[in-house]
Image (tube, rainbow, N blue to C red; front, side, top):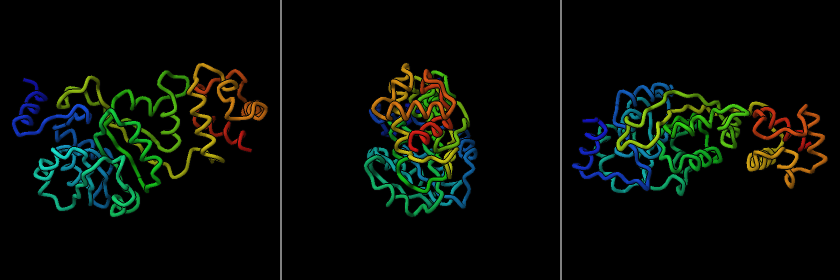
Length: 277
């Protein structure tokens, strides 16, 4: 009998029911979880924010490794099991609620500067979670998360590849992403339909190159990928003056026929800086 099925039966018998609308896929392999936590480099001198702890298997590994852990769980029904499973640790704070609707600055204040975000994120809210964290202004040192394998590939995708897009540019602008490990679907309970990836995103202190106008840069990137089959000359109409864009492309050594998907993060920065000047 598969271990995932045995875990599912055990959870069902103990009164915990998986909620598909919350994207719940739990990982019970503690040896694997410990190795993933070790790969983040977190120590007893560090503090961690965990999103979606579920029944607390990863939470226990985090509490054993870190100095302080704050875990945010939206599922009211699973919190009693989370409390029981982590009762041996006095360095854990459990917060009930939807991380997207809570006051994160207030919740994370006790974690201090340069804290870690380590989590098994529900697949259905992965991109909103990234955007929320990147836009939060919080002093995050690293984001290490379990996500859908394809999303992990998007984060690290190179220019002129199928998966390269807005998420790739935004991630590589703000972080230095790396793949820690591919985790097969059968490792989870219940198994998702696709494999997962544990990725480590070390937050940059500065972008790869100085950015003159970050809002303009992201408007250009979104427009460029919003119509990715069009040339930037056509895709950026309404975002940048045509003459200014033509001059900027020439200044950056890019042909008028170039598409957004062909530009590296550094080229996007140089182009937006030329348009902002």
